[in-house]
Length: 310
Length: 148
Image 1: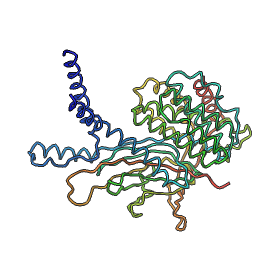
Image 2: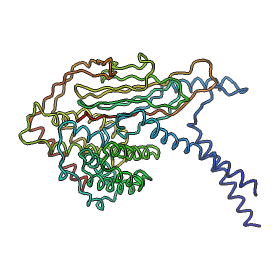
Image 3: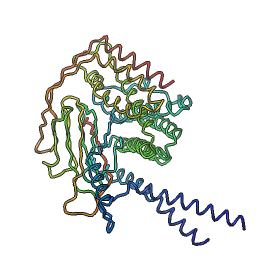
Image 4: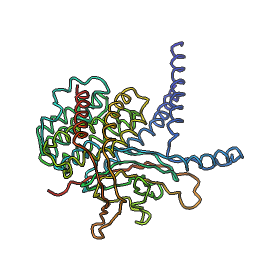
């Protein structure tokens, strides 16, 4: 009898918990009542006005960093060559046991994966997908890179379009997982890891005799001064997280160097091709960076990256 | 006791609806929204939020010289029109979809790399609706390699 009573109490307790879940879970449901029928009082009208006022002022802000895939495409477009020695060896996966190191290296390995795939490096593509999978699993990202994805990758290893689509899907699986599970701090660290890896590859691919005034790869490295603003904003948003604070210290070191680079841009003029409907944003940019600043930047990126890959 | 179990099952199903909705949206974004980026490749970033009519959102991103980009604003069918603008850092308007029949797609490239702002706003419904409509909105980016 007592057991029955306990059972019943436990069920009532569960029911209360679930009912609470429904009430809070529906707070962001699809429709918000403007008026509550039959119960219109002065108070409720005031609340409704406040609600509408709030709706008018609420603003969602996103700061978007280049994804590992975009970073690799920027590198290739700028004339980068493939150099596997620059990538983080996949044997290193066992070194990463903390959330911070796994998040940084998820970004790093995904950039390496994207870079290898863009240069049709089939074996490296599979190896780096497996390395990224281990990092994702370690971070508890369910199904970001499952066996089905690895099998699809292997089956389409000579079809670059499909490979790129698979990589894009894995990045989206990870970023949406972090977003939905309120782990934006880790998502930021993943993106910064990928961004640093892109900078590391780029700075190491610039030849010693490169012309500083006419080198696309150097131009893209300088452009990172623009992205740095977004990196800082994204880190600021998550600055209550200890791991983010540590990454912020590194990025601030980079910021000091980027501040020595000058970029000036003319007014942007959009010109649309009537046939293709593609718009070109026309503008002229002048940049100024000394070889000393470049070397300082390259050295700092190398130090930060070696701390990340451990 | 049997009745309590029945109530519990119904409550559990109701409690899971918001999560189901979330995963359904992600699945929609993956399958439907991504297709709208073709022949561009989705960069993989997921920028999505629930917006109510009248609400706005902004996204800050650097776009690089030499790349071809497609911006696609993907929103729930239930939502009214979505206005979107592309602005430079001084908030000069470079594109406004109100002048383009509320198109949700914009293709562009750049002579020099720029930080741009994508600003969007869900219009208010026309007529005297009883409810404010909310829905998921995603800002998606596609990139295209230059032909070899």
